[in-house]
Length: 360
Image 1 (tube, rainbow, N blue to C red):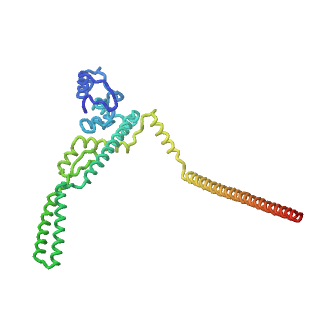
Image 2 (spheres, rainbow, N blue to C red; image 1 turned 180 degrees about the horizontal axis):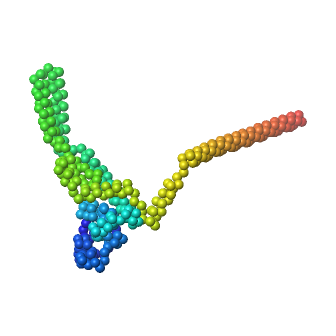
Image 3 (cartoon, one colour; image 1 turned 135 degrees about the vertical axis):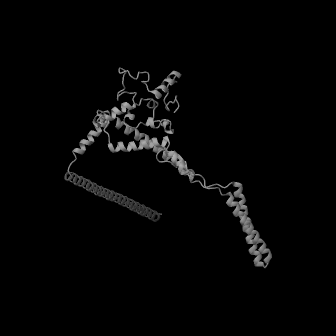
């Protein structure tokens, strides 16, 4: 990691050369380098000192393991973590504490959560790299366009010569047929030689290590793979994964007074107050009966709704038919009245004309 590394999205002022030199000295010799070795009055670091790497006390510091590797630029690793003090004497004092005292600090719980985040990020990167390299490995070997064009031309010529040989043989021209046949065989041998020469060798395939994310190829021998597994990157991630498995099996409690601790305490109380099997069975039966009653209620409501709908449809159709019938009756009555008026007027006209003719 470069000395003036700044996390993405964080704007910090540029450090002076003196500050960079001081950070280098702190990283190499520790922040207490100016104290005399025999001075008993010099301040000694404590477990809760913010400059002390608490993960180093627990036996697995990602900042110490991943320093100088490709993974030190992970966004989860901040710059200040690489500069913290790692005292072996303080680690010995930490290991001498009983487990109950160490649980009060909550450092092992924090380490478990932090390692889980790092491993999840590394697994995401490994999965992404595997998908990229597998897509490249599945690509078929390509033949140059000029060679492919030459191969296609030879295939067409061979096919024409074979057809010509058959036609000449049917016509009885044996010599010409054999000449065309031999020429086709010669060109077939040329085609095989060109295809064998043009076909590329098996391409080198890339693989990703499931532990460290290192990339090795199919042409690497066992010595090369052993060198990769003996490197700093592989050893660091192997130690991190092993420590995470150990902490998950141990399940260290969170520090008291935090939200995580209250959640854990509630879960523990619930487990201690777990009900007997008979009560759980009775509750299950009650929930089953409630679900069945709700199902019956829904079915009854659907039947009632369908009946209401059918009644409304029947009533609507009845009134509709009655209205149509009344309309037809009225129309027929008016038609009869009109016909009756017509006949009455016609009779009156006829009678009037009769009397008029009789008078004249």
